[in-house]
Length: 491
Ligand code: NAD
Image (cartoon, rainbow, N blue to C red; front, side, top):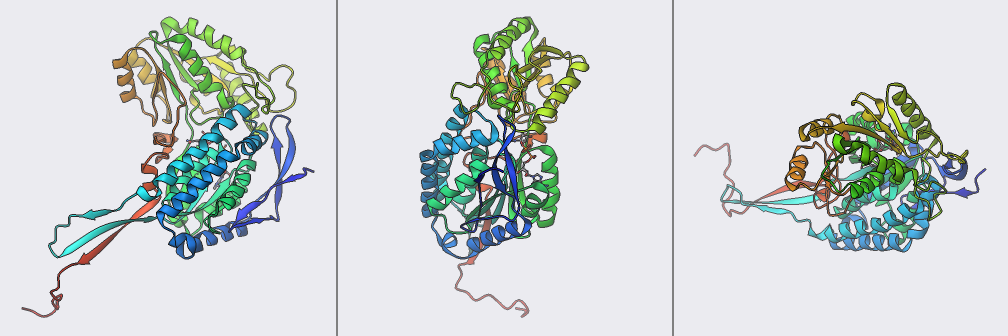
């Protein structure tokens, strides 16, 4: 029985749950903490508290400037607690400590950015086409937000929802994933310490079929912000048929990275390796589909193979480790199965494809590269969410673009070339929400992020995100002193 226990944070209180479950340390494959599974009753309490906080009480009366100050304080607290939050995320998800430290420190900037934006989101005065009327547009908070995140990068994926939602004046019930919820449940202590009024933010974890379903279909919820996989996204859309909540979806990808022969090949190889093997490939923007110009394919693959085989795989808490385990046994089994299927269907294994030697425990998997003749292999078409790179060769720019766009997804993409005009042509032609030219994986609170097609609906980040958490109210005022004539008296 695990000795470490976490609690849900509901209506300003840390609450025991009647149901608990074990969280597994992915580097060992054994339980390390007890987590509270929020019940439907817990969700109801959190949503009702959020609704109360939105309608009455200190949050509802607070100026946008005061809300912004709370968000900035929260950002400062995140930065002051990077060590603990990063250690918990590494422990609970297996993401290496180098990555969690850097990412959590940056999360502070997201809260500061939206804190600064809170009192700069203005309404409008409409130059109305009626002489005796004036119309103003008031941006009002959209309401109670149900935010649902997956297990990877939970602090980061919550910040892009909580930041704009709270800046806009909404209240939020945030559901951490049942896999690796420790960092978000610990983050709840910082929300409390920052001084958000009770009910403004509740943070809980639990399972999708009861807790997640109730949260996203609750009649008092008017906005759902979801990040996760496409199958769950479809379920969320069904859930919101009940409350008709405005919904944004940040989903997965099968992002292409296009390397032309004129690129700086060593720089491109480093970016490709980081794009697919950072976070053990468990990243929505993983550059999992390499498209490389045929004339440099062999040379480029040789570089990639060398770099992939040199990656230090090991204990995620060790700062020297470059790649940790997968987060769950389920993921490990799925990747083993898709790699086996792809190799049986004709894929050529360049490197990897197995559990690393000497790593009998934990959910470790080697950095893997598979060359394919066409796009039919499962490892080329499906999002694996693991350290598996598929490789295809192309002969012309038109073919590269056609291969890049031959996917139902459209989240991210990368282009490596020294030809400026070509870089612009590809950026224009690619169907994806993000195009990185001669770089990969750069993100910022200032820049919108989101997908095309099966990769999602809506954008997070940047100025526009706050607009997605407001609804406009049109206020008409008649400015004439003349009485309104009786409409039923003929003149
Ligand atoms: P998932 O879809 O299985 O789970 C995501 C969340 O949804 C969890 O909190 C889960 O409990 C909840 N959920 C499950 N069933 C539900 C239901 N019926 N109703 C309401 N909520 C429910 O995703 P995962 O496996 O944890 O994460 C991996 C996926 O997330 C990948 O597809 C990845 O690409 C995607 N992702 C996308 C982004 C992005 O910004 N686009 C970022 C990170 C991860």
